[in-house]
Image (cartoon, rainbow, N blue to C red; front, side):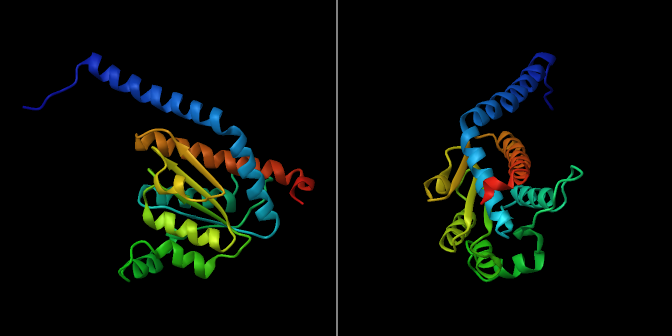
Length: 204
């Protein structure tokens, strides 16, 4: 027989969800504010030098890669300049062909090797830092001289251990809270990059 929640249990679930969605991002941004500002300055300098943002991730995080690319290419705020960005997950034909090659850890790294330049920015998403294809791609990007950023959760996994320029770890195991925080983070990255562009003397 199907069990249903009573009002008290339902309210407890809702309350817990709201608490996680508020307290974890609050703590994250309070702890990471200085590093976020540094990352935005570094990103703005790369864009100023003609670099591009290349973003990637798996599953639902692939859509975050697409989302952040759209934010930079097509600013929602009138008057903000468009900046070059590409989600490596956009090309299904290329992705499926690379995946069929037998090495699932290589698709993003291969794309970066072909498309990337030293002045570019590589932004990789992983819910717990253990996505090997993301870690391998960021290592490829680092070897090519790109600015490397990892957005992850839980304890950070492979991304936290890697020598990235910036690794942002949301200290939570709830994938919904991790993704919510990542989304807010890359909106902040977008906004502050444009703040630096309004003071281009800082980008020399």
